[in-house]
Length: 286
Image 1 (cartoon, rainbow, N blue to C red):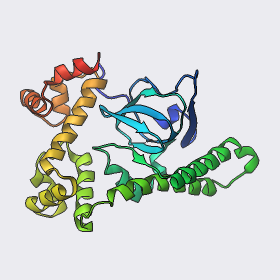
Image 2 (image 1 turned 180 degrees about the vertical axis):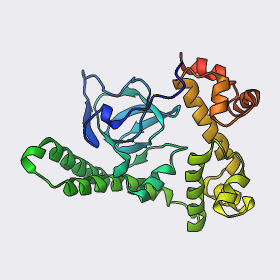
Image 3 (image 1 turned 90 degrees about the vertical axis):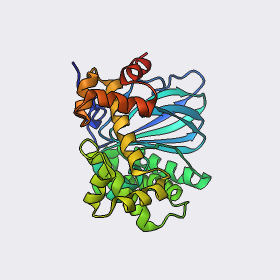
């Protein structure tokens, strides 16, 4: 019995810490990432679609990419391609987590629960494409160019910085106070680490040395939802991943997620999703 979700390492793709693939879907070509099997990676996947249209699924949410857009798929998220239209051009970049600046990680993590593409302007499209093409050229001609590793690392950091900037710009389009936003970010990071053991607003508030009411107010102002909602979403998402990608029994999944009573877990899941865990598994495995 498989009790763990298979997680793909970057080493399964390349011996290096970064992989860059240019993707072009022409009239008679075969798309390399459409209708693909589900994956869960230990690294980042950055999609930069320069033009065209495609559909990908990230954590059971189908996302349409139209025109010049970017999408960041984070470590741990289950994802797979669905379809790619003709005349679509994109870059697929897989990158070891060690390359991601901590400040950038915070920005990307804000979209862990609600992955969505970010539209690029014409200038941003050209700038990002130029940076990626330069990195790809250096990697392809590394034997002749003899660039110092630091030079390549700087270019990769600039590329990731462009992705982070696009997400950060979208995030800062609202008028939420910085302190409230920072507190929400801290809560979300803590939530990803401790959702199996911390199940209440009070648990997280105690760790952050604030009152439950203050934490709940900050999170609701920033996201529109309460702390309890995000705790539930995180637990349910991991349950979905385990139901879909493993053969683990419902009772064992309940235990893995910190529930001592699997009957209660069944009710918890059903109330959130409108269907019991077993029905969800059967539906998504068709």
